[in-house]
Each structure stands twice: as C-alpha cells, then as structure tokens.
Amino acid sequence: MKKGLIIAVIVVILVGGAVAYISLRNGNKNNQYRTAPVESGTVVQTIRATGNVEAILQIQVGSQVTGRIIKLYADYNSRVTKNQILAKIDPAPFKERVAQDKANLLGSQAAVEQAVAKLDQAEKELARDRELASRQLLSQSDLDASIANRNVLAAQIKLARSAVEENRAQLRLDNNNLQYTDIISPVDGIVIARNVDEGQTVVASMSAQTIFLIATDLHQIQVEGDVPEADVGKIMTGQHVTFTVDSFPDIMFNGVVSQVRMNATTNQNVVTYPVIVTAENPDEKLKPGMTANLAFEVARKKEALKVPNAALRFKPEVAQQSGAESASTAQASESQTGGGRKTPQSKVWILSANGPTPVPVKAGISDGSFTEIAEGNLKEGDLVITGILEPGEKKDKVTNPFAPSMPGRGSRPPR
Image (tube, rainbow, N blue to C red):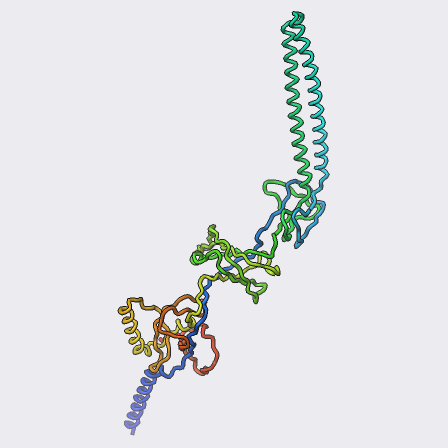
C-alpha cells in the first residue's frame, strides 16, 4: 500500500511539472499588453536650459563730484524720464569755488590791462630813446636797456593772458561741477535700485559709488540662459524659444534667440555658453532677476508618424522572441542587401497571431514624449506595444504609457 502511495505521489509530481512547463512555454501568449496607436502629427525637439530675466539695458547712475545728498527725488520703482533730476548734492561748496574762480579771473584780466598799459608806455619811451640816439644824445647802452624793458613787458602780457585762460578753464570746470550736483537720469526707464539715503555723503573716484540702477523700458526684456557645450551647436539666432518662470508657472512666454555669445564659463567641469533671448513683456509680469526655464526649438517635423517613447523602450520576454524576431531579422537583412539602405537600428513591437512581432524602424527627432518614425513598415493607426498589463489591471484602464516601468516588470525580461 505504501508502494502504491509513493507511485501516486511521483505521478502527481511529474504531471504537475509537465503542466508547469507547458504553462511557462505558452504563458506569454496569454499576456495582455498595453498598446498605443501610431499617430500622425507634429514633433518638436527642444533643448532645455535655465536663465535669468534681465532688462535690455541697465544704467548705473553715480556721482561725478563728492558731496552730501541733501534731497532724493526718486525711489524704488519710480518711472523716470531722460534728464530728470533724481537727487541733489549740497551745492554750497561748489558755488563758493565758482565765486572764487570769477574773482581770480577778474584779477588776471586786470593784470593783463596793467601790463598792456606798461607796454604802451615802454613803446613810447623806446621811440624817444631811438630819436635821441640818432642825434648822438643817448648812449647805446641806454638804448639797449629801453629795448629790453619793452620786451620784458611784452612777455608779461603773454603770461597775464595765459593766467586769464587758466582762470577761465577753472571757472568752467567748477561751473560743471556745480551742475553735477544735480544727479540726472540719462535714459527713460524705471528705478530698480537705490543705494543712498538723504544725508549720506557720496565720493567720486575711479570706482564711483552707484546711486541708482535704472532699467530701460521693461516692455521688452532679455533672458540670459546657460546652454551646455554639447547642445550649443544646435542653437541659432532667430530660433523660437518658449519659457516659464516660477512666479507664473501656468503662463508660457515666447521669445527669440538674439545672440549666442562666445565667452564660455566652466562650472564643475561643465562648459556652458550664454545665449541671449529677447521677449516681449507688455504687461511687465516678467521682472529682472526672475529664473526662467527655457525650451529652445531646434527641430520640427509636421505630419510625422510618431509613437510613444515607451514603445521604443519595450522589450518582450526572451522566450517569445525566437520565432518572430528571427523572421524579422531575415527580412531586415534582405532589405539591406537588396535595397542598399542601412537597416534601422531601433524596433517597436506589434501584436500578431504569434504574439509580439518586432518591426525595425529608424527613429527621428523626439519631444520627450513622442518619437518620430523616420523609416519603418508602420502606418497611422497601427497599435504598438508600450508595456505589459499588471495582474488585475483592466485592458481599458487609462494609464500613462510614458511613465517608466518598475524594475523587473513589463519592459525587462525576468531573470
């Protein structure tokens, strides 16, 4: 009886093993797959970068003279016009210098008049001495002294006149410095920074203190983005750019590449190049200093066949590929030798009577969600496999075909 029981157990084990083998061998045919149709539409390839919003032009307004600020006429966010007074430096010391210069000028002019009068007297005396010398009534030495006196007075006139010009120049300089006590705006714009207060002393030097920072009209702005060297070769002036800012995440702003600069910077062994994007800002929502997330449009294909990126990542289990893939490989080799065209390297999988069947394709540009099918035996409406349905997942369940599958599921063969 025990012997019969042992035989029965062995038979059950063998039958179970056979059933498991057959189930494992044919189990792939019972798999249910997520699919997505091949679509026709526009694919736009972009390059991502970040940058900062800036005014087209920012002017640092400083002081050309040293003095104490006695009045401010502009503040943060003040709209100013060209030649408008922004601040006033105490003009009293400069007025005193101008008054002193005027006095010095009058003194030098009087010195010129005095020298001219003396020269006129010396000319008359020289004429009389020449007459006396011609009559032998004056010695030659006295005549020479008269001539020398005339020449000295003529030289003194030149010195006096040079002093007049020097005093005039000093007067002009101090008059200009007096005018510089009015800090004026060089452009129309808006004050975005004020660095002084009333009563504060500003010092004019080679590195003059910035009193105001003025941005030109903010109805048009620029964004300076940092593009890695691997992508900068695809950026061209005139390219369309879209970007968002954290303050308005739901608004898409549009711009155009205006300049690709050559002054590269290296940060942690990553080389980037500044790319300047200009954009309209009619509502002035974009403010200087905002961080912009840029998307440069580098390629666009209209009416292109496209598939979800998940379809190109999908790989069925190894056991189910043998028959179908070998036929596909033979067909691809025949296409390469017969047509002389390079066989596409990528593949997608479609469902057939024998299960998933590979279709060799050549991938084109991608927008991050969809990829263009540049070559391949696909047509609009074909269903490509994007993944395997999880146990209990309904066929008609709406899933995201672009989400990466978990390790060991769907897109990777079991070990």
